[in-house]
Structures are given as structure tokens and as C-alpha cells.
Length: 363
Image 1 (cartoon, one colour):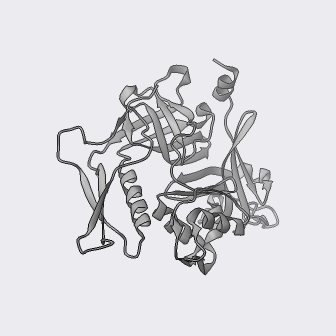
Image 2 (tube, one colour):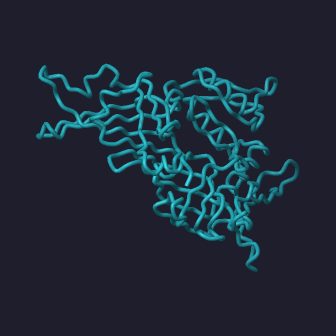
Image 3 (tube, one colour):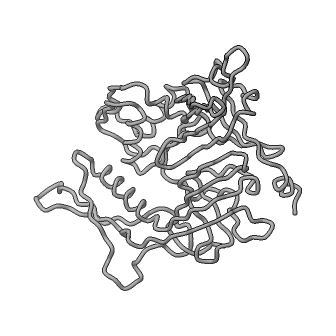
């Protein structure tokens, strides 16, 4: 066994919490648990649960701290021996104090949200693109990120003839991400706005039944075949009266040897129809349909739990990961949909949900 593996086996993971750019060292004895939820479909949030008590002057040692208020900057890291990885950063959103009859049971709950909360403060009415001055959705997302002091990692996406924002920026960005079939998330001070990146180097493997290399406490997978293999987009014709139609199939990289579909089963084609959204251009209609058919291609879902100390890393959503030890059919590369990170007296646990559009390991 390598020295790094030995260190992960014997050294507990340290959860480091910073508020207002300073580590809250004095409050560590009162922290009961830290939970961070990251998901492809929602903002990353955290919940910090702390015991609280009073000193001889009547001051409460947790909630009376100057920094224990909403809109203070917040960062959570996991320290694995000699190196560290960021779990999330953002802002305190909510502070709740609970004082039951038994004063010794008083608790403080701090809720935080990633940098997306900055984009949910102001209703903005703005014309972003017009026919004589067109912009892509990627260019718009980059400008919106810059307005809040964030860097942006984007793809161009759709080019718009006319595009008006009449809502908060996060609501607007979510709509544009949906129109393009893009991921939208915030991590390490960056706004990410692009299609799923399935060809990047996967994260360290989830190891099941792997002897001393095992880091996964449990794993369960499910293959739901009742999802369409293709979608037919129906739209008004450019000329004439008969509606036009176009069949789209998944175009994402396969995370395995064999696509998870029913096209080779000798049955009639598994196809659903989708009407062109009202007011959408042909390009947007095709992008929305492609996003829908790609979403339905994730027919395989897996859930499980990692021992964070044995895994030795922070498993991140929006990235791929290899699963080893569950056989040649279910093993291989998956896309990470959700992860809940829990730091408590029991250690560091990572509960995950994975997605896959194929079966079979690619060696």
C-alpha cells in the first residue's frame, strides 16, 4: 500500500470552515455537523449545525459573534492530511437560533448558498441581443458573471436575434441554460455555462469490493428502460401548411460500450413528439429537443455512499467518475448528478447519485 493510501486510512478528514475570510477556529468545539449538497439541478447549499451556550456575562458564544449574520462570505474545505480540496464557497443565507426549554439543548443553524445567490438579488429589465447587435448566450453569461466579479467558463451556445431579460439574473441564466441544453453551476469563484463535458479526465475511482482499496460503503444501480430513445420535434413549416418534423437522437459521448436504448430489441421505435416552443427559433427548438433527448438517455442511475477518508477526495457533481468492482456491465464511467457531503463525529461521508447512458466498461 502506498504512503498516501496509508495516510488516508489512519488520518481523519478535517473540515475547515471560513466565514468572512477567516477560519472559525474558536467555534469548532460547538459544531455538531456540516452538510453540503451539490446538484446539477440546484444551487450548492450547506447547513452548519452548532451547539450554543452562554458565558458568565450572558453572551451566547456562537450566535453573538459579529460574523454570524447573512451575507458574510463562507467557504468550506476538506483537509486530507497534507493537502486540501474546496467543497463549496458562497455566502451565509440564513441564521436560525433555537432555544428550547432545556437551555443546554440550544442550537444555531447556519445555511449557506454558493455564489448563485449574488444573481438573485435584483430584478433586471435589459435587452441583451437585437438583430443589429447579436450576442451568443455564452457571451451574455460571461458579461453577467463579470458584473458580480466572477470569472466565467462558457460555450457560445445560441446566437440571439432578440433577447430580453425581465427577471433576476439567475432566473434568466437558468432559462438560457435550458434553451441550450447547458449545465449552469458556480464553483471556486467561477460561473460555468456549457454542455456536459463527458470526455474530461474522470475523478478518482469509486471502489466497490476492492479489498484494502475499497472506499465505497454501498452501491445500487437501476436501469430504467421506459424512456424514449429519440424525440421528434414538430414545428410550423417555413413554407406551405403541413407541419415539419425532425427526429433527434442523443449526441452525448457514451459512457460505456453499448448505448442504453431499446433499438436492437426488435420492437417498434421508442419515440416521443415535442412541439416547437411558442416564439422559439428553429435553432432553439432543435437545441431544446436535443437537450430533452439527451436527458432521457440517462437511463441508468446509481446511488451509494463513500467513506470520505478512504476516498481521499471531494467528489464533485458535473464531472465523470469511474466505478470499479461491480462487474463488466455496471462498472465503468458515470456522470455525477448529486453529492451530499456530511462531516460529523462519525467521520466524512459522501452520498452520491450517478447517471449513465451506456453499459459495459471501456478498457
